[in-house]
Length: 293
Ligand SMILES: [Zn+2]
Image (cartoon, rainbow, N blue to C red; front, side):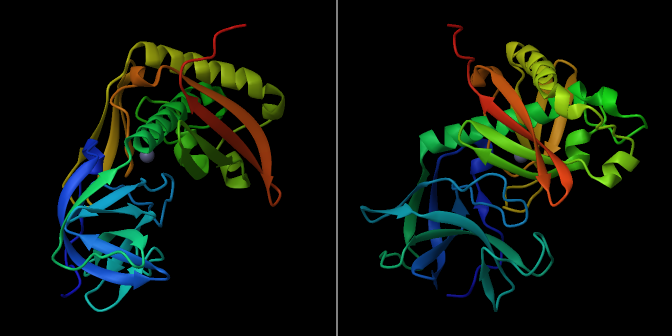
């Protein structure tokens, strides 16, 4: 069977855990088998911005069940098939972008099989909570750190200078939280961000971010994903109806339905160093605060 010529249809952005699908192609990949289907509920890790890890889950066919060891994005131009490490930017014309489900190499799965895909609910919930907390914390950080800008900067959806969007280097979603690294480099300082004395005020910064987050969690701000189509590369946005307005962040991941669902969001900060460039590290945790002893 030929390689798929259309992007995989994805059900995870609307929160689906299961999908019934047809196998379009299988290909060996190292000691595993990459399984390509017309649709999937399994969130793959993105090669360009690998913030949210892949779902864990299973693939069922004819009463047999195979563990999905990993899920990555693949691309094909009809001739070559690249799995995980892509030679083109996502969305490049003439290429189809696919979810590759990696199963054990001896799995009995073939083209044309009707399969059921199911993402593990506990992993999905924990990563969704972590991803939602990550975006809320980024917006709260923008607000809490706004006083350090001495020049006008690009604004976020709530009107604060977009420190997160301007300084972010990497974002890693974990079960129930996230770790974001912000580079405090020369160009950020030239743009008007004053990092003087930040090292001595990390606990105060965390307290003011936590205050904003507590207000938003108490308001049980609704969260949804908006998308222009059902395919893997169709543009998607995280939208959150915060008390200060509707916030929108481009996002390919999965999310909770509201901030209240998380029970609470708290952050902590540390300063790190990346080859001489200071890096502000924000660690975010979703969940109710531990009861005071
Ligand atoms: Zn996101």
